Image 1 (cartoon, helix red, strand yellow):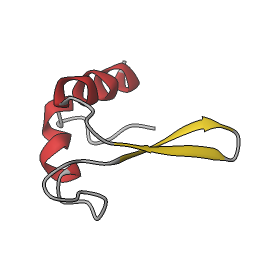
Image 2 (spheres, one colour):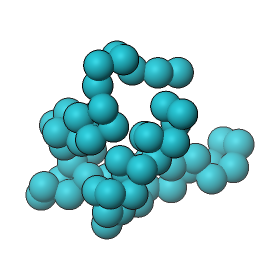
Image 3 (cartoon, one colour):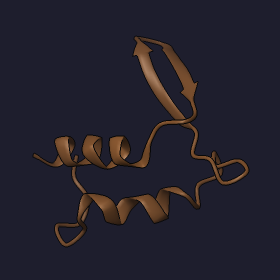
Image 4 (spheres, one colour):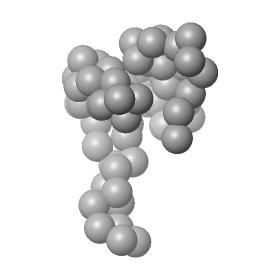
Length: 58
């Protein structure tokens, strides 16, 4: 899966911050743990989110 070629990883963050899962300005991520099991995480640093996006684009 990939996004538009002209978008750099850091370009995604402002769009993610408009998502319904953002509460009080904090991004909440729903992360799969095992098949059929996910956890909601908050407090993930922006640089970690950007690095993860970058890893997916590589």
